[in-house]
Image (cartoon, rainbow, N blue to C red; front, side, top):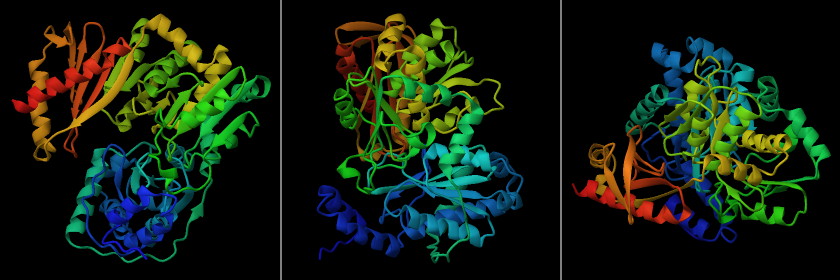
Length: 541
């Protein structure tokens, strides 16, 4: 029998041989139960995440839950306002929805979260295996106070996570998460140990049916048109669930059909040894399935485990959100007549900007993180988005959820084919011919560990101070003029030909992230090199 000093060692052994070592998951569970070591709780752009058995342990999950309950009981006016409730009494009555994706120990962690909530006198809804956008819709359909979603999204198999959404269904903002962090980290430093709670009393709910009810009510997606298209046209669709919680969703919403093939739907806590993200590499099985079909209309997608990211293909073209977001803008505006703004993160392709400018649609770019789209997705907003998306494959739109939603992306792509009479690759080609060709990409470099956090942020500020509008920059053998400098989230330098580079420091790791976009595929490596040179000068200064 193999022995390990800690969960990290055990995970390395498992992930090096997922088929031969999956029996060691029982050892990971024991580490998660026994480990009482503390961690620093940080809610990043999408919740708190940690390695199962190392920092994501049963005691630490109970501590974070207890911190949330303490936040509830404090009845702080500003926090309650951000939550969208009056007080703790209202939270107890409206209730909290708790669920998880289908990762290792999800139901076990959820049991303890629900047990502590129940002991505090709070009504608890249990949604079991649930996608992230379904939490958003379930909150609204049930008029719940908030939700706790146990998922690390697209992270590798050794990770688990903890997301918190207030009563509007969107990701919690810093006015809530900072309070949770402060309370949880105080408890950690005090060495708090919380015993496992008894079995909770819960009300089981069906998140899929609540989601379907929501989209029928909101009407942005035309389910009848999609079903008619699927029934009458020569269509083949392949959906790769990568062993995630999106499985069973499409057939539950648009009905089962022999024209849809589903990949990787079985339980697999280790995801077959891959990083379960909607990447071009992971899209390969769907492309193979499409290429084996002779259907007129072909669509392939891959979704991440918690259903908030999606990538597309027609069997020929790999279509990331950088391009699909622009297609969605064009489709929703031209074909469905939806008016409003284009809202996207600063790190996302300017392809949609080109579409928006020509169609006289106003543009709003935000910091990275889907929670920054909330003001433009709220039903009460005066400046509503036509579509909101970010380069990391998340999308939502007018009258839809405040969370990014892979199922929405799939339904929208099918409706595009139904309305345009074209495969999405052909539709993309038409839009490119009219609005221009854009080639986005991302990369990054590591820097000395001493620079992590504030020192790195401070050094990279010099880039925005040095590169002013009108300045000349050597990009390979070309000299480009700076047209715009955006310092909203890092420094984005837009050149006169609409190519650009964005340099962002990581706030938690010794890394600098590069996002670039060129007007030709050949220039991408040159633009990355330029970003590295600019960064090196800033760090050396």
